Length: 522
Image 1 (cartoon, rainbow, N blue to C red):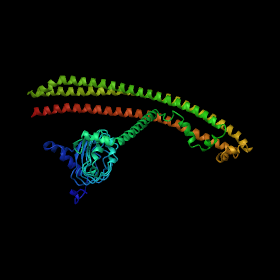
Image 2 (image 1 turned 90 degrees about the vertical axis):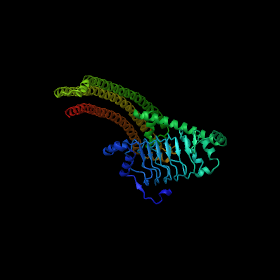
Image 3 (image 1 turned 135 degrees about the horizontal axis):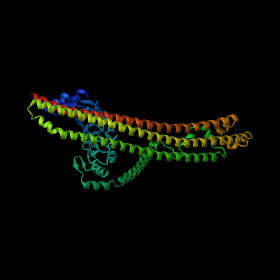
Image 4 (image 1 turned 120 degrees about the vertical axis):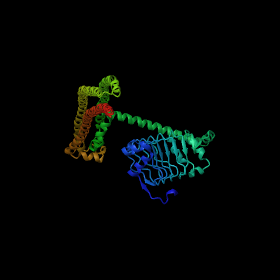
């Protein structure tokens, strides 16, 4: 425990503490009074100080979505938790607490500056996602292993590191080790890292550094390949043809087909299976190629639609802006003159004219929006027709190709059944005793057994084909449905937002006029 708080009563982070902290750090004097009266939204807060508050557990910070700086130093915190929603955090101070394990930081991918000074941490771990880390202060902890410092090599942007006060600093070579193993580091323990120390360290640890570089290169190449493979898979999934560019579906048919796998070991069946495999893979590849091509067509259609939509909205907004400009040009001088006129009758006449112009402007802007709604409705209807045609063409082609796979399976089934019955006759005559395993011989007890086995294999294969086809059909139909629902939802939101903007602007103009009228009456 930190000595300062050995006798302190622990606190929890509750709404009262948070509001108090926000008010303390908010605007002062009159601005502060207004902010306190109106309330400050937690989601708008970017900096938060919760130091010296005897906090035992990090909690209730989920509303601070835009927080970039968080100060939790000098508390009683034992575990790093409750920070998952603070994804915009750049600076975090957890110094002078009772933390033993580095954890709970995975979501803080934007974090640049982290202080864990004066805790009880003994191992660097669980920080892999902090790709942007530049400053790390972790002095006065229990870090004892120089080798564990190698963990910090993954932070390419790390420039400042404080280790002073850890057991590992008692090793006379610790600075050499750090300088050699962290080549991008500039400051160590708040001092510029001497290049002479780095040179000496590079010589002393030359072989271990070379081995590390080699292993890291291998790991990077492996990671890049995995990322590339994942990108390819994601692309294929977006086209709904994942795992169709090869024998994957064919192999999937036999993955749960015990009888079919046994039968494939029969003399002559291997050639039958190889032929089926080749032809099935060719058809699957055709589905795959068509799926990728069709996905590009769908993406192109989406791009064209968005361009048409944006063009219509922009043109409409420009017309609206022109009408507002014409109104302002006509009425600004009138509005200024109203404040100078002393004749109340003339003021009333001019105010009435100004009020009528505001009403006319509102009618014009709302009429423009109504015209835009009608225009966009036609664009969306055409877009929906185009999407429907694309889906139909996709399904027609894919289902035709799937029918070819099904035909191949039926042909294979007929040939396998014929061959199996022929083989049964030889088994009954004792001609196959030495060439069959016990599992395979169990299928050739009688005709019913072998016919049932071949039939069961056939059913499994057809089910796999049907399921994959159903998956394709469901995915493309769901895509079209979700796409159009999203378009309709976004258009409704756009319309509501535009009408609200118009009403807000008109209300502003009317408020100005009312304020002026009230001033004249006074």
